[in-house]
Image (cartoon, rainbow, N blue to C red; front, side, top):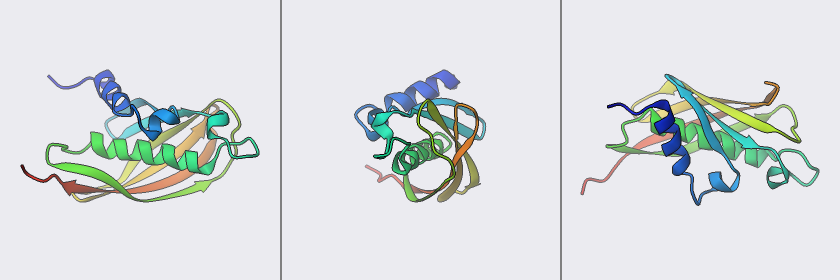
Length: 142
């Protein structure tokens, strides 16, 4: 029996225990045929000194959702996923609420993947545009 959407999201969120994702309260909240969405609360935990969302926290959100997307849409029996490059262009500041990162594939190759990640706020304003490259590496056979 295939996993339900709720099962996949629950497994992704359970995998975040005792990680940076848990520290930043990053949560996978939706996915479909070709996308994954995560959210992160904006509060003092992710502020830079002047009280706005830190770009590094935004990049961590983007890399988390993009890497999980590559995991979800790969055959993990044979490979594991690693991020190899991320870029982030920050367009707008945020001081409260949530930010949402939606990862979609620009390229879904057997070895490398390229994801477009759009980060928006509670009002659907574009906050950051990120690109993440991931690589699928073969698992060692026992």
